[in-house]
Length: 567
Image 1 (cartoon, helix red, strand yellow):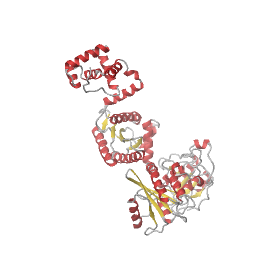
Image 2 (spheres, rainbow, N blue to C red):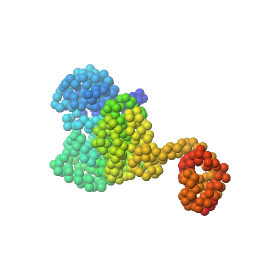
Image 3 (spheres, rainbow, N blue to C red):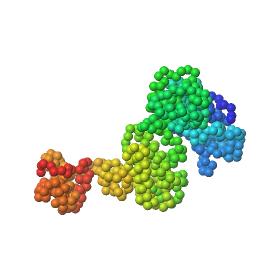
Image 4 (cartoon, helix red, strand yellow):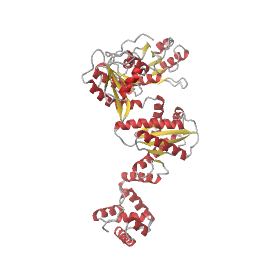
């Protein structure tokens, strides 16, 4: 491992052009440098091998190097050299390529080897970083993304309320600054999601091992401690752990909607934690719940990238030609699309349910079609299933029903599922999404009794809903004779509207229409004659009958079916 890097200089605000270039993804106007990035991750994570342009260079998003794709890295990117030996020709080629595209840094695992790409790096102006062998690449990727978005000057650490949503590193720093102790945030399996990096706070050996390996040491004493934590409803104090030499610490579980999302730990340093630390930690757990839900959604890199691509396809904002190979969809494939809609819920519960539904739908669909891809947009989770030939509709519907049944049992919520029409190519996805949304609109309106449907099942109510939208935008569509009939009924208490609807619904069959409104046929005939006379209707004209029937269907509420007292 290379010697420890020098302390980075913290520059001031970025220029407008730097902000526009995306140098500060979460804090407009703030320039994120390589030194700041390394500061935020802490010295235990990465060390500088060489930095020919110093540490005050701008850095952008991390990019995982794919030796098969060989796509160029973006300007200012931090390139993760996954599977590349630092002492081989591939390392030198990678560094040269990074220099040509303006990447900021390349990260290697040295594994006890010398990095032979140093001359190329110095010539290209690319920094080389080394990470410990025990650190996973996916873990490093998530750390880099979080660190890029959460750097703050030690004198400007925000309170919990000002932390950007999902930024667990910034949240850990905020909690640490308030309590005066080093903080880690973990998931339910005791994996470290984020940690504070305030230099003056103590980092004991078990905490450092947890940060590097992303996993709390697995010992009998640790397992006993977590059983105690998960059975607790509040903050627990920990003075000793069997098999480990630790400093005193506090811990609190993070829960929402009855589900445990993880925990927050605070290590006491040379000084006691702040007064009222337990109450602060309880509040921190409440705040952390939404942050952890957001953060969990982006852990699986490949699924997230594929989901983002599907979202762009559904919205028609990306190139169709390049999307198919990036999604692994073979030429000539047909596409099945499903939509799963969650009911409205309190914000934190809705966030949790959406994330769990994405995971569940992805699991089912990938087992059914390996290259399936899922994404959530609002309360709807869309699933795309590529196939070499169209699947039988009953098979697709059965899959949707199976997922619905399992999801409702798991989430404890009532869902609606739309089975879209088979799409012949990616170009048809925006229209397919509109169809799925239309089906879900019908199911949510109560105009159809089923919770799983295709467009053929809901064709009529779907058309009526579209016509209602059209009538809302153009009120003149429902004006005319029908408007006068409604006004007359409201003013005089007559029943002409229900009489007209019963007559049209029964195709002019007076005995049937009379039975539907609960009156004698002669009474119904009298009302019908009065209706025609007063409002000058011509019910023998098919066009007039069609327009009146449509206008009746477009009314905000249907006319009464029971027998009123007045004529």
